[in-house]
Image 1 (cartoon, rainbow, N blue to C red):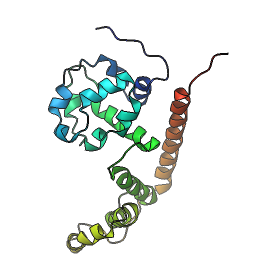
Image 2 (cartoon, helix red, strand yellow; image 1 turned 120 degrees about the horizontal axis):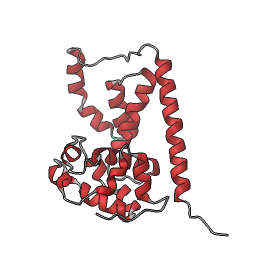
Image 3 (spheres, rainbow, N blue to C red; image 1 turned 90 degrees about the vertical axis):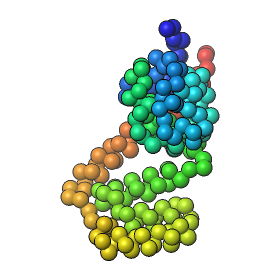
Image 4 (cartoon, helix red, strand yellow; image 1 turned 60 degrees about the vertical axis):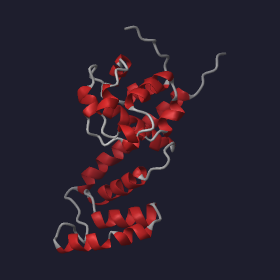
Length: 204
């Protein structure tokens, strides 16, 4: 099967570069095994198969604004059943990161939840459920009524010692913070490089 050689800086190349084994993306047969295996396919604006076709076509804006990445439940069925061994779920994660970095997402609270969760991991080295609920519903979503609805369940979990009232910090938290700091630096560098690749070049 012949494949068109992509010039440097295309959306396809960005996705390939940012995904482990992403070079397998060009081998997609458009067979539909991924979409047919997906338990969330009916909720997706575009199935994984369509999304891959759009990536190949360079339809960056539509892809990064799609709800597909947020409907994905990370079950990896699409990946395990792909006859070409394309890391489809990992590609979905790549697109999710791009969508967040560029602010293309809409109609989803997933980035706010992720940011609240990672903030607590950076502070304590682990999640803090009460802080997560308060930070997410009261401050990120601005829906304190949702927090109040969770109150009875939260009290039951506290009484049964299924949830800590006070956060605890892991040992050697400085080492974890150093790793997170390095990861952020690498992510920022990758975003700058990707942005540079998207800039039009002008001949002299």
